[in-house]
Image (cartoon, rainbow, N blue to C red):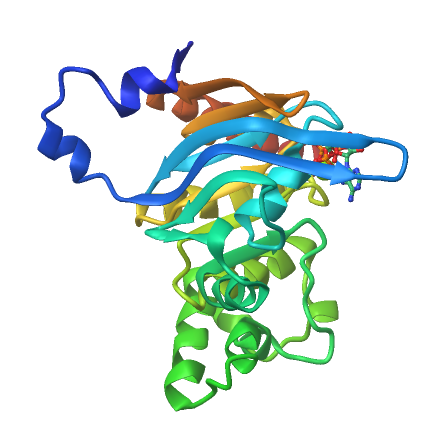
Length: 272
Ligand SMILES: Nc1ncnc2c1ncn2[C@@H]1O[C@H](COP(=O)(O)OP(=O)(O)OP(=O)(O)O)[C@@H](O)[C@H]1O
Ligand SMILES: [Mg+2]
C-alpha cells in the first residue's frame, strides 16, 4: 500500500510553524531540460517539481529515456536546468556560474556510482579522502575523520587495503564513506547496487537504512523494485514528467527488508 506523498509530507491540518520547521535538502521548481540538436530539440524534462526534506530517502524510477539521468545530473550540479529553479539547501543553483556549480558539487554532494569509481592506487582511507584532496584539505584531522568513516561503513579492518583487494560490496562501502566525507546535503546514488549480488545488495541497503536513520538524506536512481521498496518514497518519471510520488509505509519497508533478508539466508543455506 502506498500513499501519495503530499498526504504525508504536508497535511493541510499541520500548523504553519511545523511546516516551516522542515528544512529542505533540495527543491525543484518546474524544472525543464532541453537538449538542442541540429535536427530536433529533445525535451528530456518537461516541468518537474518536488521537494526533498532533510532526512528523506527517495528512489527515482522510470522507464528508459524517461529523464532519470538528466534529473540526476541536475541534482548533482553536473548540469543546469533549461528553465525552472533548483535549490540545494537555500542556494538556487540555476543562477550559479559553472565555477560556483563545481564548488557546490565537490563540497556539498556525496556521489555513489554503480561502478564505485575508486582510485586503484589508493588505500581505503586515502580513497575516502579524495574529495578533500581536491579542496587542498588533507591533515591529521581529515585522516582521522576518514578512518572513522571507514569504521562507520564496517571497514575498520581494511583501512590499508586497495580496491582490488576488496569485494564489490566492500568497494561500494568505501564509495559510500567517501560520499560522506564532506557532510553533504544528500547522498546521490546512481544504481548503487546495480553491480552487486543479492546478499551484497542487502548489505548496502541495510547500510543506507542506518545512514538514513542517522539523519542522512538519500536520493537514488534504481531500476529495481526490490531496492525502491526499501526507500521512504518513490518518485516515478515518465516522458520527462513526474508521473507519481508515493510514500512507502514503514510496515511495508520493514516487510521488504525481512523478505530480502530471508531470501539471502535461504540462498546461503543452500550454498552450504
Ligand atoms: N546529451 C544529450 N543530448 C541529447 N539528448 C539527450 C542527451 N541526454 C539524454 N538525452 C535524451 O533525453 C531523454 C532522457 O534521457 P535520460 O538519459 O535522462 O533517460 P533515463 O531515464 O536515464 O534512461 P535510461 O534508463 O535508459 O538510463 C532521452 O530521450 C535521451 O535520448
Ligand atoms: Mg539513465
